[in-house]
Amino acid sequence: MDRRTLLKHLAAIPLLSRVCPEALALNFDPASPGAVPKPLARVRPGDAGWPTPTKWDMLKQQAGGRLVPVYSPLANCQADFNSATCQELLKNIHNPYFIGDQPGLTQTLGWADAWTFAPSAYAVEAASAGDIAAAVNFARENHLRLVVKGGGHSYQGTSNAPDSLLIWTRHMNNVTVHDDFVPQGCAGKLAPQPAVTLGSGCIWMHAYQAVTTRAGRYVQGGGCTTVGVAGLIQGGGFGSFSKHYGMAAAGLLEAEVVTADGRIRIANPCTNPDLFWALKGGGGGSFAVASKLTLRVRELPQFFGAVHFDVKATSETAFRQLVRQFVTFYREELFNDHWGEQVHVTSDNTLELRLVYQGLDTEQAKQIWQPFLDWVARSPNDFSLDRPPIIVSFPAQSLWDVDFMQKHASGVFAADPRPGAKPTDVWWAGDGPQCGQVLYGYESLWLPASLLEGKSQDRLADALVAASRQWDVELHFNKGLAGAPADAIAAARDTAMNPAVLDAFALAIIAGGTHSAYPGVRGHEPDLAVARQRALAIDQSMSELRRVAPTRAAYVSESDFFEKGWQQSFWGANYPRLQAIKKKYDPEGLFFVHHGVGSEQWSDDGFTRVAQQ
Ligand SMILES: Cc1cc2nc3c(=O)[nH]c(=O)nc-3n(C[C@H](O)[C@H](O)[C@H](O)COP(=O)(O)OP(=O)(O)OC[C@H]3O[C@@H](n4cnc5c(N)ncnc54)[C@H](O)[C@@H]3O)c2cc1C
Image (cartoon, rainbow, N blue to C red; front, top):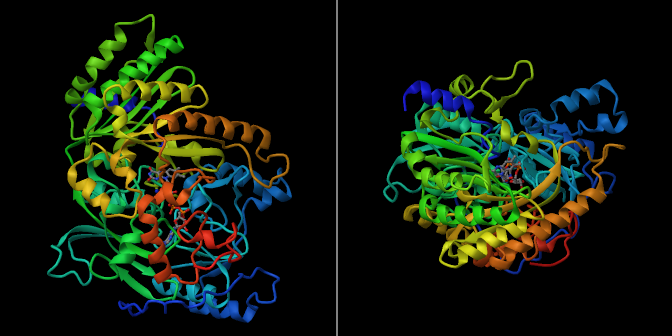
């Protein structure tokens, strides 16, 4: 394909789918076995034990003046929805960069019947590991509920808590690319390799622009450009090309963290290796507060590419044939490390193809798809395409190059419209509706690759169609590692993630919500009756998939707030090892998040200990 044709195709790509001073203490004294954990309850403002203003002032001094009271900008709307300040806020509430800049907001505003955003009492706007250590010590010594926020993209609400002290890492966003990185203490054990060190408040867009756009290399992070680095890595993390490069957490080479005792530690394969392993998928906000993370840097392929089209079936019977055909086609042609992202099986009998690929030019990709397109074309009474399929490759280095994309694929990115915003602060427009949303329901399930074999293909297709009668089903192929190269699978095996990810060809996600409701704002609250009805439909939809994949296994960062047996679902056989590491590094449970490792010992709000370790 010549450049002109390529650019024409690129311009036609609709939105890519939703796819971002201190001495190091390297030795560790484990907690004395049998020590009695305390305290039994944390304090709130107004409680006798709440720190005095003098104490807060001392923390402010220790944190270089970076202690601020936290207010929710939504309070302006709670006071008067028609006020100018509220209306100004609502103009920005779907801008992920605006939300990211507010200590008093999160990217998801709430989840009906699960959680509602609430601001912390105070935040340390950390600029260094020393600031983080000051906040950790203060919270521990004063029995405060502590919460950590980076990119603020937690669906489960784990980066906000009322009456808490927030460690907010937004401004710790330095990026340093290395040619020859050796983790501390690993000289002579690990060979030097290209790497990138990212401040823990960095978002993926800024990492990609430094590593890919400017340095011409690749770092495995997340698909959504505004997701935070620290939250994604600790959750395991997948990007569009994880079927080739593997899990993002598997690329972690070293972390600098502050543990519950306030010490700044290095975690890597040679120093604190147990903590290092737990940070790779054991869940954010549970083991330590990361101040910076160093990740492996890889070679770029020549091309990345995208496939985008919809096939609509004229009847449910035809749709079942279409889904069945796609399952076979996926097994034979796409079940390998070239292909990632999503296919949606929808309630209106449409198969939405929103895939990306790496390492193929346009002609190679088209050849792969031709047999499927021919099959569709042979039955015009049963199937129709919404438009000619878009199948196009482009130089891999251009994927996060805002100038290139705006010139050749305008509309793919949405830009931060605020005056003074950096022109490179953009997000995939397809991710936009998730920003400022309120969730009704969100469930995920890893689908084992055995479902792609023999007669199981029938069962899988039937289950997908049955599920889609209740709610649209998204298959995220890049979030399951079956079909990945052996080294990517081996690296993922050495993380804390549920090993079910290794045998899964895709993560099924079934989710829904609204982006026009504002929790706590009278007259604009989410409609609970609608929310409950939709949550039920989402659950019924997932039940159809559970019939063919009965072992509960879900991706912690993209999963149900109400996940049953969450320890097993998120971490499988790794859970007891994670519990032991939690006990060693955080024996008093300072770090608490909903459904995080060790959280069963605390009340739902994390304020009261309900069980001993
Ligand atoms: C629009 C959207 C798109 C997404 N796309 C993807 C995707 O493509 N791939 C994917 O794998 N996931 C994706 N996710 C899920 C995302 O990876 C997780 O929600 C992730 O945890 C977000 O990290 P964060 O820093 O942005 O969020 P936060 O809400 O700030 O943090 C998430 C968790 O990590 C903890 N945490 C944050 N910073 C630190 C730190 N420095 N030290 C210790 N704990 C910390 C928080 O306490 C919280 O528990 C997406 C989520 C959204 C909302």
